[in-house]
Amino acid sequence: MSDRRRFVSAADVARRAGVSRSAVSRAFTPGAQVSATARERILAAAEELGYRVNRLAQTLHQARSDLVGVVGGNLGNPYISAQLDALSAGLHARGLQCLLMNSAQGGAADLARLLDYRVRTVVLLSGAAPDDLIRLCASNGARMVLINRPAPPKGTLADLIQADSTQGGRQAAERLIAAGCRDVAVVISGSRTSAKTERAEAFEAEMARHGIPVTRWAEGPNRYETGCAAARALLARRGLDGIFGVTDELALGVLNTARAELGRSVPGDLSVIGFDDAPVSGWASHRLTTIRQSLDALTRATLEAVDRPAEAASTCEHIPVTLVERDSVA
Image 1 (cartoon, rainbow, N blue to C red):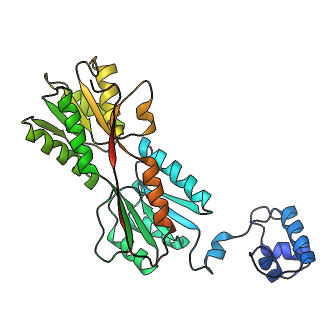
Image 2: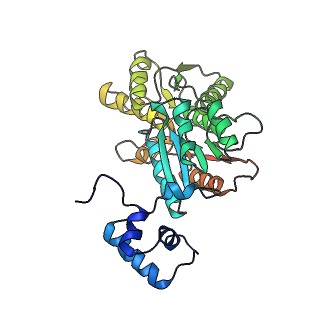
Image 3: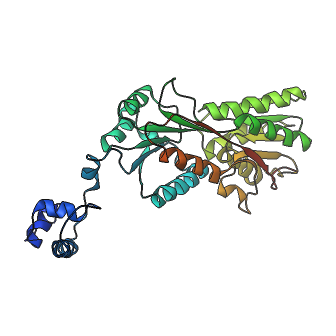
């Protein structure tokens, strides 16, 4: 009886095909020399046995692997989910494989395990890059791609991709001012990443320039439920007429709680604006006015960074933002 508890090996194929182990290796290595007759027998044996090439083992002999480590927390966030979908599709089209790690489930030591798999690049979707991970990537020639994250220490081999958070926060303020809002709040959550903070600060600065007071809600994780909690607390007092959620997930929590639970008319009684333009924000049930950071532009810039040679100089690309008008702001 055959042992079904292990993978079929190249040695198994060699025995079935009546060839050497090295002949099997050459048959599955592009450009390697093996006779047509031997190749035919090897491929037939591999098909019969269900053999698959051990790509991890091949990686050990290559200058750069085809694995790209992608690190992110809050993977249920609508924008991050769309970002992962687009990025993984783009990597697949390039013949690269995505190795996903949920940073919410572990620390720097767990993230460093990506390098055990010889990843060519580490794409960090959320959270500041741990110093240990930066050091290990530099030591092993793996590039880092940081998206909407703080710049790493000088000399780090890392590409920065940043949406214009300052301009986005300013645009959100300008739109609420144009809607006649005079008592507003910004919901930032307790995570306070650099991008979220920049959006909130730019929003507050623009409002201050017009003499409009701003209440800041900075509690809880960056999740839909935090937006719900913020709406309940902020709308308990009278007069608040505009809320900026620094992510669409937060803004959608505010929007739906105000409408469905608190009986507020949006945009009649309250104007709500978000930041991201996650696909869900345009659904007919939401129609959230938001600041768009182009998913296409972000994905293109990320893939270009992944394509760069390991020794190429670091780059910084800024993604422009645009206001998307929908029904949550009058």
